[in-house]
Length: 330
View 1: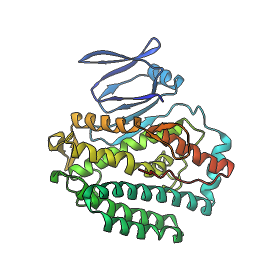
View 2: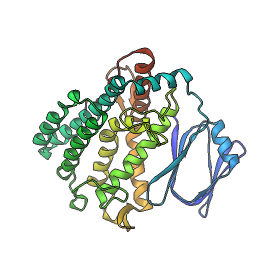
View 3: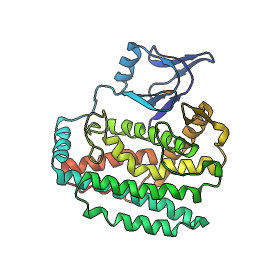
């Protein structure tokens, strides 16, 4: 698969002939355009119309984040694969509440079962999570009897709060103790990592949806409202435990990231640039890791799994093939 480029420094990104050039105080760096899928910009970077036209021609998605790690927006090139037929079917499945509820339940079902897989892994490594696993399984049994999206969201919130409290048994460094979920701004280091990781995953999923016929504006668990995109939030739920959370456990327990990698700013805690680069590297290593897919002959990367998940949803909507979320088996 094509690669993603992350820019943390300030500078100027321009088109130079038929490739990209990034200029900063550290010098010039040419970026071959043929093998790029998305560009993530965290630093103060100047761009121009010529660059955007070039990115559009090469179907490269551009994501922007501000200094406080918040997602600002994306340059989503003119839809290259969007299909009017698929968009109509997506809308139909959103307007039909029974159909929407089924898909939304599958997203939560996939998310919860991947959470349980993560907990079982650490339980087998002496983290003693048996009680929490049982409690989450009992909560998950309530899923099918729920009749509204709001009730589903409550179930999802209940499971995730139980899950986040397990972090204290998985993470060895007490400086990253979890107390409660806090956002905008995150109040402690562990919340800072969760928010940053989830934010990156949302845009990674958005870039994968761009390669399909699906319209990212129409989600099912997350309402299609004034928010620009919502389908990427839905699909990301399935992959947060096995991509973002496992990366968090890895960078902390291996001491890749420590307390020194954070700043206190505007009443919250945010990663320093060096900390962001360390986390993004770990996340990318995870995305490029290949695994044996349960139903395919070939090994696939975690990043490829995300796109396959979008294809499965597209088949459910257009061909009546029942959508079943990806569940990790390791």
